[in-house]
Length: 312
Image 1 (cartoon, helix red, strand yellow):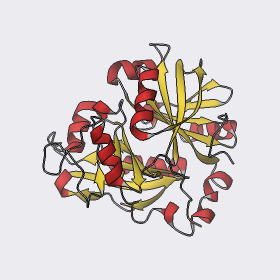
Image 2 (cartoon, helix red, strand yellow):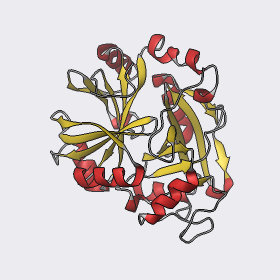
Image 3 (tube, one colour):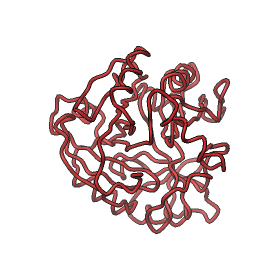
């Protein structure tokens, strides 16, 4: 059975089609994802795909219910192209999220009416979504840092939308040494938590789930449901923490990915065996050194979130 994606908001924001990570090169990241996390690639499997108009390379895969697209600019890097521009400014870094939306035209027009800049094909600003629109990219400058691709479709070949998914999904939790049971949440670092939460509610009709303070991470946070994913908006309470340094440098921006695992000790042992340095932030939270994960801050947890709509 295919994944039954939950939806939020009046426009039907649903399946998280991918998290994009921009890297120096695609293949080393793809091999890391396969070797360490058990990723299954379904686009750019044997070698990355090249998209000439954007002058970049990419592959797409899944780790449990989390889909990731790894992109890298072609060499020499062209800073006038989207991926080249991002890489020139930020280097290797998590880039954006993507969602399948039932009513992409309605959502786009709603965002425009709230002052969000949406670029028109070929340049300029859209004043109204075309009736035949199938995607849009709201400006993160007006979305409290959420860089997001909104589309009317999922990615062809995504295992999660195939009838075999309910069987394949078991391999990460039951067979792979990491014991990943699901994506727990993805964290967006923000300068002002209250302001960011209000903006997400206004623009995307997110559903607040839980709030709290993480002494281990030096953050106060709000967990919200946006479509088929949980996002955690986190404001640093410690400027010297990794999150604090990230927000000081990048302001509001996608920061990290956290997986739920069966056994934290087993997950840590596997990562160490693969040469990934780790830190136990608390009894239920483990971090991997970003220098060993191609600058993707990856976390692993056994902690539970109250009111989690995805809890088994």
